[in-house]
Image (cartoon, rainbow, N blue to C red; front, side, top):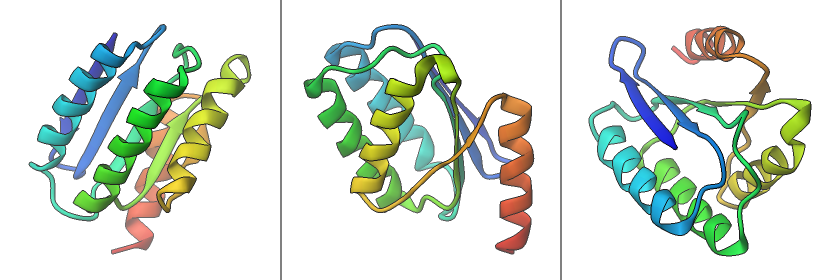
Length: 126
């Protein structure tokens, strides 16, 4: 399951992925995500909520890398990933993938904590 929500006031995307994500679902999520991000201004920030997302197959991980690359090319500013100790394998996959395309996401344990981190980072960048 996935959800992508825009916050125009903060120039921010909140994305969420849950469960075992297969290639078809990742493609649908990626298409939705990229079309919505085009509505934000370059320098947008992203909260990635993957608390309940299971580790990806190699095929899905490669698709994720391509999506992360396109997000960066669209003008990604700051990123925070919501993770827990229970999903460190998934968190490591995402961090390794994002690092391979040129960015590292900060980590938080809750949506509120992620938004506080981004608010502070976005304020410093203005």
